[in-house]
Amino acid sequence: MHTSYVAAATADRAFQYTGLAFQSRVHSAVSSKPLSQIRAGQALFHEGDQGSDVVQLVKGTVSLQRFISDECRVVLGFVLAGEVFSMSLNGRHICSADAVSDCLYRRLGNSEIESSRENGADFVGELANHLRDEPWRLQFDTLSRLHLSADESVARFICEIGMRSNLRLMNGSRVHLDMSRADIASYLGLTVETVVRALKRLTASGAIIAFAPHDFGIRDAESLLVQAGSYHN
Image (tube, rainbow, N blue to C red; front, side, top):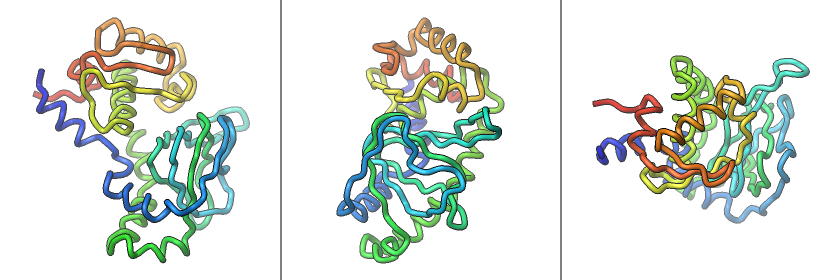
């Protein structure tokens, strides 16, 4: 097995949204803030709501979504435990944030961010850059999937969630997918049936094993990366 490649691919893609050192500094800044809780299905905020607070998700999964018509909801992405987000522009939220599972989170206001400079000279600037780039990361994620087949999209989704959750993609890693098949399908631009069939093919190939509807194990990390279109000789 090309373990050096697997490690390199993991390091390259893991925590594209937030680095570990960055997360640690954010945690230091918000650790004294009270924990808040929302139940699965509840909204943290809605598209167009006023607000620009920074949110650190402590537990659970949040889906970012927009309604492009009264009956058409599009999932733009997911926020996982430990990650930081705001999704605001000029004081208003650019999308809705709904709890996929029961969530715990902390908020950090703009005035409090400015007082957090003791966490490191680069912290405030780093945070500002992270929040500024949020919409472009969502757009980049969408564009990067346009050339992928359905199986590649689903395999890459499992890889990314696994790496953002566990930091390493290796044989024996466990990947928990809080989100429904419908949310995954919306995010990937596929039908629910196509996602289900792709998961079955990944399982049949020996790349993954399904322990439960939302829990998977990585049986062959190299094979999974190949099927995700991420393998290069």
